[in-house]
Length: 268
Image 1: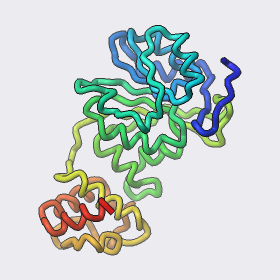
Image 2 (image 1 turned 60 degrees about the horizontal axis):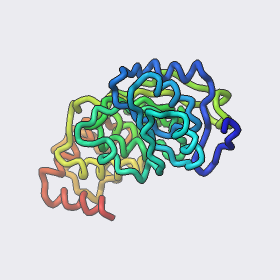
Image 3 (image 1 turned 60 degrees about the vertical axis):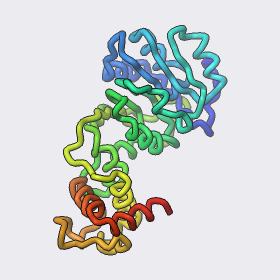
């Protein structure tokens, strides 16, 4: 099975460097009783190290061919053969949570998967994933930079994000055309919280949908009373931090008519 041909439709790039695999597990530092979920185990290179470290390991794998191999190799592996984007994460992680998530994520699903993980952070202790470097740049970006955007805000609203180390293309089979970065996300209590998450999401979406426009123009449909907020309406979306977007969203939440406008936009 070591000769298994990577499938492009699954975004498969198998990580084969043992030193890097050990660094990934070392960063996770799992205890035997930890509840660990590996996303996209592939041929099982990382799975082998995890299975040696924990009593029970769960994994989600979309490729049925490699799933058959994984079942034969790892007796303590609870394997779900499905598309992780279709799996009910709330049901998978259960009510009590405290899961530790790790994986070499396919580039083509990394952003939507992260967004889904952000929705169930109350059941997750931490996330350690290998991502396209450009995605990690967005996760760790700061206001006023080109990389600052919706993903930055979604991640940093609830998590501490730390880029741990880079991984070059030569460590994969087949080699991708981009660099990768191993990143840690630690859920934490938010310093500021929107009163209505749906309104907050819509304000951020509208702002970055037209990120070259000023906020006054990009958010024109929301009829914001700019005299009641500290955000400069002449700023562009990437100049505003999380606190600014929370203040805008909370203003709309306090105004029923404006809140309805935001929610209607979110449903379109």
